[in-house]
Image (cartoon, rainbow, N blue to C red; front, side, top):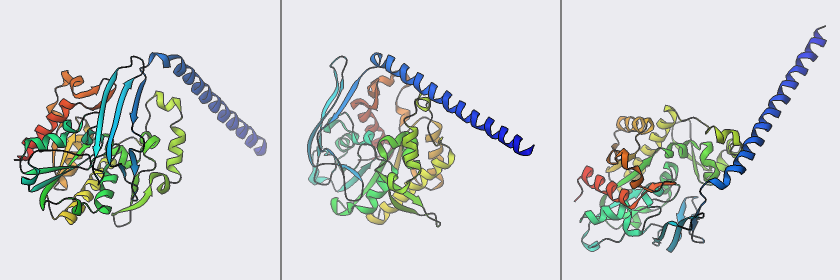
Length: 342
């Protein structure tokens, strides 16, 4: 009797599993069909970078190739260029910031961040670092930001590159521009694994220190491939599901990485002038500010300068949320004012 009951339960469980699989498969097929039918109604954008422009150095850190590189974003439906710019890169992989009176400037500013700080979609003389240099006379700006970078990449840059030898001025400061998505780049969330798998990954050892474990691909041999499989699911995409769901612990981890960045900068440059500007109005930015305050890291909210009613003025386009040339200038003005730079 028990054996018969066991087989019935097992058969029922198997039937339930098969039914669930069939329902999921049916939903995936339906959403695939809907996606194909509505594809023509969506705006088609083509973002193009020059060949060999994006590279990775021997430490696994993304960087740009030395030279001048054209990049553009084009609306394929209308033929309109949303932007068409050139990125000029120096011998150290930094975006060039040409400012007047370089010889008279005796202090440096290291700018770190992602494409928002780098100046995606704007010319060399429209970036945030350029405008800060233009509005000051004592500081020489160095743009160490790049597309897609997060706190792990910037920590690796501070740890592995001899930045001190690349900067001639003795005194200065570091400015890091944070945005909410940087938390996902620290946690290695599913949504960023479509493009960040080969980039820098750190794990926390038993002493609470960050230890380099190659990339997200090599350091998470199970989780990253699983995320890449799940990324193919149209059900998860339709419901905008991301894993993990960002919580307080992930923001705390991000704050710890930023603290490690500050410590590494202080060790290499002998300066405590490390500032974080938070481009966020969400609870993530608020929680990060609290975490940084608890660690004695000076931070400022830079998003407050943008009026809600004029959001489109501050974006490259309705489909591209990178800061426009106007937004880059406004953020630079905010930084100069908050830090009282001369």
